[in-house]
Amino acid sequence: MQEIKNISRSRAQESSAAIEKMYITMRHLFNRGFYKPMGVSGETLREALLSLRPEIYGNIAEEKVELSGLLYVIERLPIGIEECRFINLTSDEGYSKSHFQAIVPPKRRRNCYRIDEEQMNVEITRGRSDIYDILTHLTFIFIESHKIRNRVLLDDAGEVSRDWQKLQQAVSQKKKLTQIEKEKVVSHAANILGRTFIEVLDIYDAFGSEVSPDRFLHVIYWLGKLAIEEVVDDNKRTITFSPILRERLGHHIHGEIWATNIKEVLKKHKLLDRPIHVISANMHSVMNSLFATTVLKTKFKDKSDFYIYEELSKSGANEVRDKVEEFAKLHGMISLPDNSGTNIDVQIFDTTKIDWAKSSFPTAKTGDKKPVIIVMDYAFGEQAYETIDELLKPYKKDIFLNVESVSIMGKAGILEGEKGDIMIPTAHINEGTADNYFFHNELTAEMFAADEIPVFAGPMVTVLGTSLQNKDLLKFFHESTWGVIGLEMEGSYYQKAIQSASKIRKSIPQDVKVRYAYYASDNPLETGSTLASGGLGTTGVKPTYLITIKILEQIFNVK
Image (cartoon, rainbow, N blue to C red; front, side):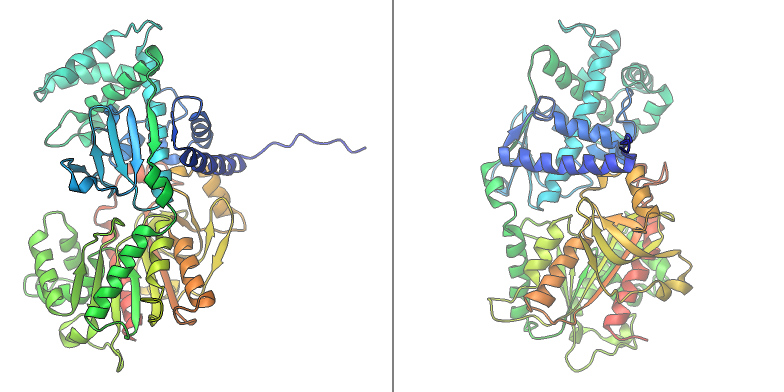
C-alpha cells in the first residue's frame, strides 16, 4: 500500500485560505448584526489577518507596533475613532440633516458622525467592499492596540509602566508641545511601541495636522487606553451594523438614484438618443485633456502639455484649475456633484459645443451624431458593479441607451515594474473564486510604445481589498501560469456589468467597445513601494494623461 505523504500547504495557499476565511467571516458577522473585535466573535478575523500578514500592515505579526501601516489606516478612518468603544456602521439614515458634523477621513470619502464620547457612526453607501475595507482596518488597529497594552500593563489590577504614565501626562496637556517636551515623550513612546527613537520621530508629524500637531501621541494613548480597559474592566469594544444597512445592502439603492439622476440630466439636455461613451476616471483628466492647453497656453508659453497638466495637479493650483473648469462649462461640460450617497461625481460633455479648432483634438472626426461623454469618478470595489449596472439599464424601462464604449482608467498595484508604469489588462480574475472575465481591450501596449513609459500587458486580479495582499499570494499569481501583471479592486465588477448589459439583457449594443488601462500606484512585491509608503506625487500625472488621451483619440477617431 502506498504511503500517504505529509502534505503541507504553501504560504500562497495559506494566504488564499485566510482571505476566504476573512471574507466569509465578515459576511457572517454582518448578518449577525454585531460583534466584539477582541472577543470570541472577532477571533477568526484576527487569526486570519495574522495568518495572512498583508504587506500593507508590515509588522502586524511581530511584537513591535507597525507605524507605517497605522498611519495608512488612520488616514482612512475618521478622526477620533481611536477614542470610541462603539463603532456603528450605518446606511445613509439622515444624519446629514442633524446637528452632527460630518467627519470625512483625509484619504477615504465616507461620512462619519461622532454621536457621543463613546460612539462613532460610519456611513456605508459604497457597498460591501467598503465594509470589508473598514473591518480589516479596524481589526488591524485593535491588534496593534493590544500590543501597546501588552507592553505597558504590568499586572491584572491595572498597574501601568512609567513610560505610559509619562505619555498620559503629555496627552493631557492642551497646548502644543515644545521641541524638548516632544522629544522627551517620543523617547517614552518608543519604549511603549518597541521602536527606535528615530523611527517614532520620523513618522510623528505625518499623523499631525494644524489643529492637532501632536495627534500621534493621542492615537497611541487612546488605542492603548481602550485595550487596557478591555482587559482590566472587561469593557470590550463593539462593532454594530444598523438594521437599515443590513436591509438595504446589495439592493443598488444608491446606485439606482445616481444612475437615474444622470439619465434625467441627459433627457433634460436632449442627449439621450446620442452615442454615449462612459469613462471611469478622475474629475480632471478628461476636462484638462480637452481644454487645458487652449485655456493656459498664454500663461505657460513654450511649455509642453504634460508640463501644464503637472502644474494643474499641484496642490495650490486652484486658480488655474478654476479657469479650465469655467471654460469647460461654457463649451459643453455639465458638472453633476454627487447627492446620491455613492460619492461618485459625474461630468457630461456634449461634443456639439466643443470648438475642435480650439481644443487639443483639432482633427477630431465625430460624425453626424455627435458623441456624449459621461465621466464618472472612481467607484470602490463592488460598487463598480452597482453603478455601471444601473447606468446601462434603459431609462424608464423602454428608452435604451446607445452606449458605444465603456473605458476604465484607474490606478492599481503592479507586480513587475515601478510606480508610474502602465498596465493594459487582457482579462480580469476574481481573487478567491478564480471567476474570470476575458475581453477584447481596444487599448494595446503597442499604442504606448513611443511614450517612454514601461507598459505591461496581461491578466489582472481583482482583489477584495488593498489591505488583504501579501507577497506570497501575489508571487503565485504573477509567477504561475495565471501570469498576472497587477491587482486592482473594480475591473471584474465593471466587466460583469458590461457583459450582462450587452450580451444577456441587450440593454446596450452587443458590440460595445471596452477599454481598460491602469497606472501603477505601488508595487506590493517591493518593500518600500507598497501603498503605505506614500502617494505618487507628480509621477502619476504623465501616465494618467497618456491613458486619457489614448481613450479620447479613439472616441474622436483621431489617427
